[in-house]
Length: 470
Image (tube, rainbow, N blue to C red; front, side, top):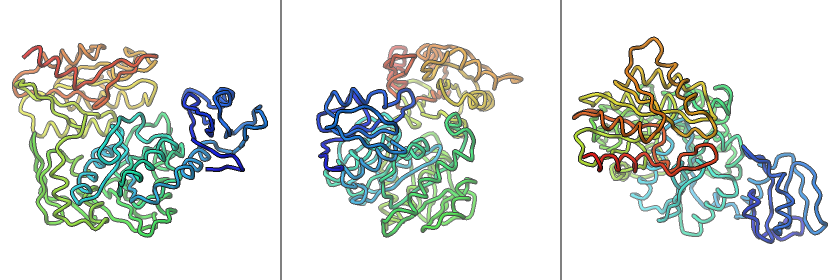
């Protein structure tokens, strides 16, 4: 790519990754301002610098001053990688909960229909047949465009993106041209970033603004009409739209929903479907994925086969079985709505007690802590309050704020700050037919404590404890 006579060999926002001939874009991150690293980038061989503020540079380094570095990063990245989204059928999914499961379901439907797929999720990124771990739900613009470019090069035809509200506000998906966008739901989360629900909804709506502006020939919006904000979007967006619901009038509904610990059975569009992902929350996920299949012209039988073929999603109601006489589930539920949905689902089929292990992350959305405590007090038979991902926050302080939700209740609970000891305690107290739910971290493999990342995977720890004690 050439910018104003300067040949660009690469593009990055991370000065540590600079190579000779690169364009460096100085963006403001959560902890660091890229402006501080401009001179380092020049020393490493950057031939052009994008910045919102002026800076000193030698004459051979191209200076590009812009009003918004994030917009510039997205636009230059899409250009550098030759607009890969134009060569893909690109589906974006946004919502507080359900994005990852829905992505996996759509991917399974598309692969069953014979397409080569890629996706970007909170858990991992998939390019054709290979996967790699994710650092962000939606990567920074240059990383995202690089991934989409790799997909094109490897023959991928359809890609699915989890599109977080943060990524929309921070312009990470600017330059992506979508064929479809899905709205799952909106509930309490990330209000430390968005401040209020109106701003949170405004961020989610940006995906549908992008869909309306996309030059793709056929563009479909798929909306959860049971959600108040989904119903509002249905009224105001101007592209082709399709709705799904369990309770409201909609284009696609699920009926005769039954489930136990191992399987959900439901009817969609007159077709009987089975899934190993159970509960009302997963019925919504399945409906959204089904509607995508219909919009893409996939046969209903193929859609059904794709849904039934998916057996496992890391850290999403993942069952841990080491031969113990009780059930253990590890789940990513980390917001009030997702925790409530998880516990309500388990309560539907549990025979013994529901023992919950959970905490809340540090440095974000303190308001949800007592809300989640109140849900635990109401829906769990026994709760073990512990540490989640504290970062630089005080774990005891976080637990104290969660415990405020237990006030004026007789709910049984223990406080064990060590997550390892908390999990061990819950497993030790479990009796036959009990269900131990370990919530909040799901697939995550590292626990950030102050300036360290400690290797800690709830699933691995649980298996190790069970194998030692059974």
